[in-house]
Image (cartoon, rainbow over the protein chains, first blue to last red):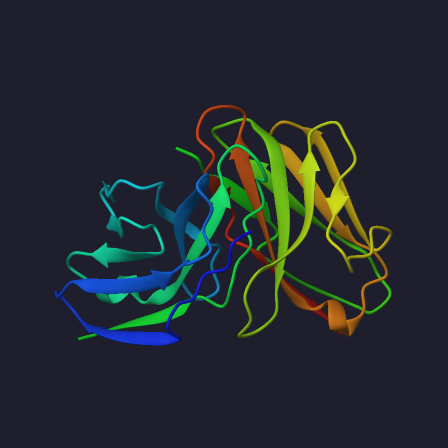
Length: 111
Length: 116
């Protein structure tokens, strides 16, 4: 699996947009970008995934650069409940099914 | 939809005993389930991949005779930690992939194992 690089941590004010960056410069053409998050002492929660087009769902938006070497997860109006470790993962959708978790990034939403 | 449960949510056992953890997909059928382990302040580490009706595939360094995995149906997988030792104390998390369609993995809430 291609590796990803994320900042170790980030703070965000409640109610503001949280923009979480991820670098995946070695991503292959058939690899998707997945985002999961893990709130303390819980199982990871799927957020969103995409290949090359920007994606949006009820939780977040995913912006992928044209060269696909980086992406940004956007939480439009962060709440205190969004405080979690966020994992950016790249993997093929139809091939290897393993999700390999890196260290992730701790997002702290402050009141 | 896509709910995965684990039982128990936490367990304390004595060294040398065995512990079974169940993982169930409540509202969908899962051909593939995964077992992860997470030590404090560390990321999730994949232990094994299990497909319904076949033997699990273990990641390098994971002892298959110590961590017994059974995936007897499309909604249930079990992980048995045999002859548990204090170093096996960890947060065990399972995930399940749907029978068909999307490739998202849905995770259970985890099981906290403490071996005394």
